[in-house]
Image 1 (cartoon, rainbow over the protein chains, first blue to last red):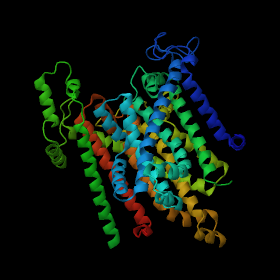
Image 2: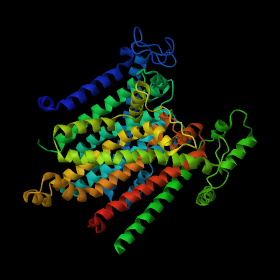
Image 3: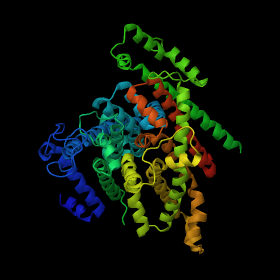
Image 4: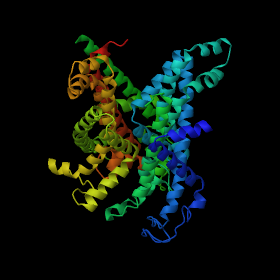
Length: 275
Length: 318
């Protein structure tokens, strides 16, 4: 714990900024019902009311409180992006480690499948799949998770390739340990740092991707408060010089910048580079 | 020369195989269309007969392999089928849309590529200076922002505060070249801001990577000025990764325009795709995806071939 605090003290200002922002987002997301002045979907006033009392950021196109929706949006948008990223990592890491440990035709087969999947642009692939399966939260998580697991697969496979050939893995194999034991106890702990950094970066991509889909009206469906669709719903205000629709977009940007800063610092720490 | 030719043929073959795999995946995906789709598209008044006719039109009443080869044959002869939503020929629908999208992507590329490479070389030249750090922070922020955020900020500045450019790209068929450029300026600028960061960072990284190699040290030691070291000695060897990232970003420009096209109501392929997805107009979605996939694969192929040509050592992998 002490070492951790020492490490924090040495963190560059950008990383500290990032961590503070992420903490605030997490707190707001968890305690959304207590922080928000109004409910997520309740119509409380007229359409497009201006900033002021009692609606701090005004109201949206249906007369719902902007600030409250922004706060609940933290929960919905960030939450779904987190679940999706976690799912992508579960799938990608499992198959990546499997391919690296088993090698041979399993490796070849999985590698070729991933090659083909990566040859199709993610957005196009996602749109194709969403046309077919419809746009519920579950399909969203599954489709995007699987699409993003391809790059996780490549990374997990590449980094564990270097570990698989080491002596202690050989020893574990000779000892007669099972495949899952070798993956979990011998390989996984040794490839964790790059995977953690990748998690941060992938989270940003997934988060931006889901926001873009929601913005296109193909992601989270109304009346759920979600930052991407909030921009879309209130976009007409821009042409009147009102910046309200930019607030949720800025919330998206701020979080991704923050995560990027922290990941940069983390990569710097684990790469062993000294200034 | 012989080795290069074999390489190109090999890559083309690989691209073709990928393309066939892609078309196969798309056809398999259609197999999973939910049964109530016909109902949804045709509306409440659908009778069992119209539903059956609808399924016949999608080819869902035939075995998978017959349908797949039939579709493949039709596509190869240029027949992409008709739209479910308005019964128009898809090939007709795609033509102008594809042209518009390519037009937008070319403008964005013409602006972004020179700027990105210049900025990247400068950042490598003045590494760790204030300029380098500023560019770094700026690019990191543009990478992290959603495209629609950039787009709306540009609209706010250039078409609301100062009325220079239109916020909606009203592109008609008989528009002069410069008028077309003018009306697509804001979407092109948005795209530029989105792709420039990636290209610039890769250029910088590629050059800095090389700066540690012995021949650069040699050049420095014999007294070559730093600017010449970077432009004459490092840049030619850094070309392979730079070309690669430039072409990949061009691929992104063509495919990633979807969001930008929707913001500016630009009549391109991306907007057609999004419209068709929300209408669940399967044949159009399929055709759009195919066109996007072909472009993407072709550009990836070009990136591969160009980077090998610029660095003959890659011809002999060890």
